[in-house]
Length: 353
Image (tube, rainbow, N blue to C red):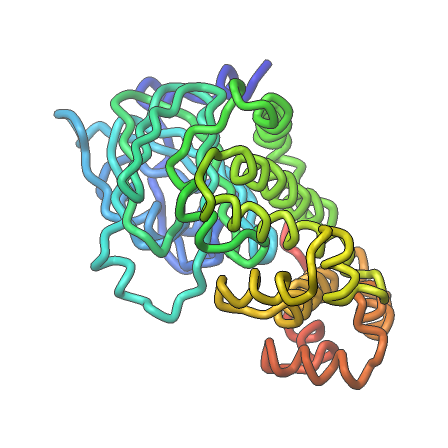
């Protein structure tokens, strides 16, 4: 039985109101202190406060009369830098406005993936509008204004994660927010059932395995979005950008290769090294900077992985093509402000179940 079938219909059953504040929310923010994996609201005022504290600051607006009888529930897991949350609620609209974005300009940017499990919704961002029906998914950017509107009771699954985990350029993502990707998409046919089952697993999704599964979900999403980027038609400039993306994804698959170099990459794509350097320079970076950034991000993820807590720091560097411990420590500190060992010690804390 699917989560959409088993989930409570918010408008038909009483739920416990949110109580005192203070406990970490599903997103790591302060939120009402209820059961560790569940937060509920029995009025629209409570819901408005709850969604802002559990995700990012949002404006919630009722879309029909009778908001005083509103009820909603969030069920999910905070898995280090990621959050997986199932939302069951009555009809309403949420808005991420420029003013709310500006409240915390130094806040780390997130992407949010929404999978519609029941009911219908409309996502608006970047001049695009996506009608979300059961089985549809779409991604949106918390650093840009957006609106999500639901005209009736609904259930959806939200995966929120830092932007750098996706490994796609900001330019690519700017074209793919609020784009419906679901069962009709060639990769969506595989991804949507996986995410639906993930919603069913929320009660058991905790600890190191839960964190690893959440990261694997982001990797799967990255594959879907890269496929979407590659398949878009376009002219000469788009062909240039598609080649850049193709090269970048080739690099991602070769990060552990000690022979990875501009010459190696250029030969694999039947181009000169000069053309390769120009390709990256036109996008505002360099080949070396891209390789280094992707290697460091992979190493950072491994340092945060509880299942690799006993792996020596030097071995993690080697795994990501940075075999010289002194060099690895130096470039990691430059990127993240701490040595790899200090970063691991500070961030690798027990995952709450």
